[in-house]
Image 1: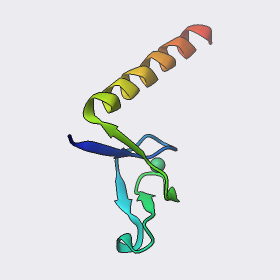
Image 2: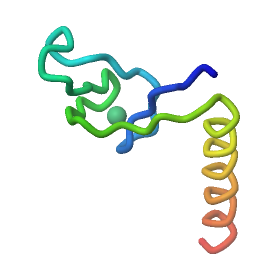
Image 3: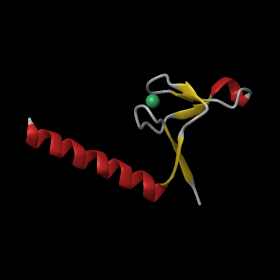
Image 4: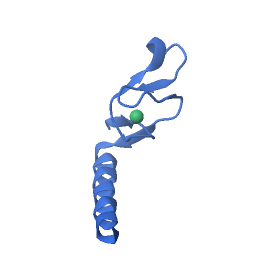
Length: 64
Ligand SMILES: [Zn+2]
């Protein structure tokens, strides 16, 4: 099953291995996050997360 690497900070999928993979750390091209921890999601899980974020935004709009 294909997994998608997702930045835990900005939820971007623009994840690359830092310094050619020597350190084993990941780097986010979108926000510059560097760390050994990234989210590994299946395509389905990723879609659910994105849709969940949208729901949260809509709820926030209602409150404000
Ligand atoms: Zn990021």
